[in-house]
Length: 161
Image (tube, rainbow, N blue to C red):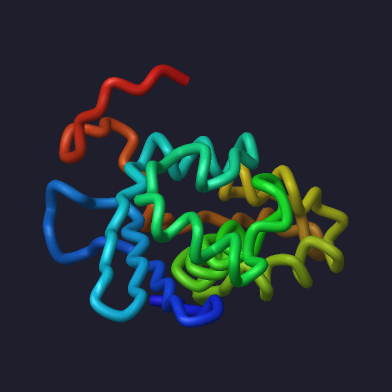
């Protein structure tokens, strides 16, 4: 979970892992005094956010008081460049792990490896795997992506891509 205070509102972003039917879903909680609102970003919407850079606020519907509090706190510079998107990216980078040979690596580690081996960082972030040669030996990078739910059977939504 990652969280940030925007003025007097606390925003928490967390990966749903407890309930099987929500596998790969991100929950965003807005808390301001006695007011609480939770929105859910399903796996197809998480994929859209990651691949197409669609702003989170275009994918979910927040209550008016939450939007007003974000605007008052200056969290929404624009829908494409706001602190809420950054907070969701922080969670994704925290939860996505790569396997490189036998080691678990974070996205920060992977960025360094991409620089070292001339791999395309943006391509790796989208495909979540890479194959290359080091010292004449084939190497591979695969991911354990907790946001991936390819069949979407556990969290059905009729969302066209």
